[in-house]
Amino acid sequence: MHIHILGICGTFMGGVAALAREAGHQVTGCDAGVYPPMSDQLRALGIDLIEGFSADQMRLQPDVYVVGNVVSRARAADGSPKFPLMEAILEAGAPYTSGPQWLAEQVLQGRHVLAVAGTHGKTTTTSMLAWILEANGRQPGFLVGGVPMNFGISARLGTAPAQGRPLFVIEADEYDTAFFDKRSKFVHYRPRTAVLNNLEFDHADIFDDLPAIERQFHHLVRTVPGTGRVVVNGLEESLARVLHAGCWSEVRSFGAAVSDYSARGEPHDFEVLQQGQPAGRVQWGLSGVHNQLNALAAIAAAEHVGVAPADAARALGEFQNVKRRMEVRGTAHGITVYDDFAHHPTAIRTTVDGLRRQVGKTARILAVFEPRSNTMKLGTMKAQLPWSLEDADLAFCHSGGLGWDAREALAPMGARAQVADSIEALVQQVTAAARPGDHILCMSNGGFGGVHQKLLEALQKM
Image (cartoon, rainbow, N blue to C red; front, side, top):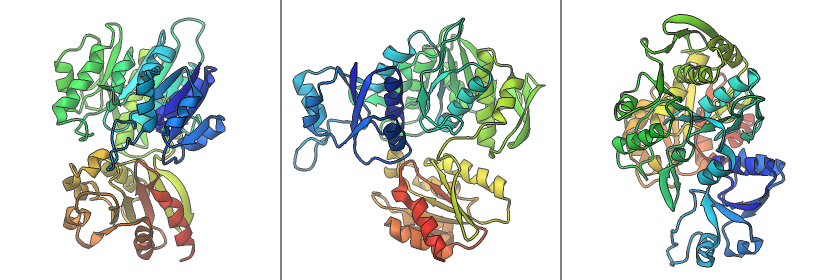
């Protein structure tokens, strides 16, 4: 069929596009504000991209329009629709569906789905699990909200085994499905193995409070069959409440000392314990307790489909992480610039902590970030920012587009924090403060105005 994807450059919708193209469908799509890595992947696949959401795209006459959750019925100040194409689709009565529903109907049917949910670490853990299965000969399909460097692509269909169900690993997002389907994306996936990595308040634009998100996670638990497995972080009270509301599947916990899967040792080199007994060893280039927990979750999920913990741990020794997860973008005058997707205060804190463990206590970390997610733009978590940046020596905030005062929010940090209203001013502030041996950690869930390259170019001129 011919599918036309609205919002094709989002990490999820871009993955749907890649799967549809691999399955032999004709794929076109549109979006605004295109940025890597998804734009690069789509162009490499030969998928035609149209800038914007103009109604004249109706002339393409696809079999179905697949609508991303960037699309809404919103109106501009003059009353005109922000997404004219969607209005035209509705007016014409043309067939449309959401990305998750299309995926569920066209790709996931008949597969053993391993879904990774959680406020943090979904992309990394999904990538770890996909790599464990790949390294152990399972050739899984997958859809990841990023580009795992072991694969170089964000999605593929995978290969059906001679016996049993084909495997598909998917990043299971709790954000809503589409403007016409306000359920969390993950309720569409019907997993047989569900990972609940962690759970705290996020997405303040669509959830009123933590119990509202816990309810959605319980909806996911309800879809797991009796022979399925729920892998749950044993350190999280919120997830304990989710399971207490009802669970009809096998449960395996990780993280706590009394969990089914735990770790002994430092995050870069640790023993995996299964029911307290040594079951494998992970030695790799990743740092941070959060990645240690991600590894335990992936190992527990892989064990459900027959991969022994020792084999899973060995595979993680070759894991290369995901683009934009502590990715080194370059070095200039002895100053290293990193790119990371962290945007929630907890994620910022764990990311800075991971880099601190990696570079030691004496090296300086300059944290450069923008509160770009809908939750951060609303200012819901601004009071947590000083806490999230405790381990950084200096912090630089891009405040463009915020409806709250970043300087006031960061005031507890005193002279350690600076705020800039533009990318250019931000680059000037950082380069003025940087010195050889520093580590500049850029954090955003968007393109961040190309700040990484601009910093490297400015540092070269020092």
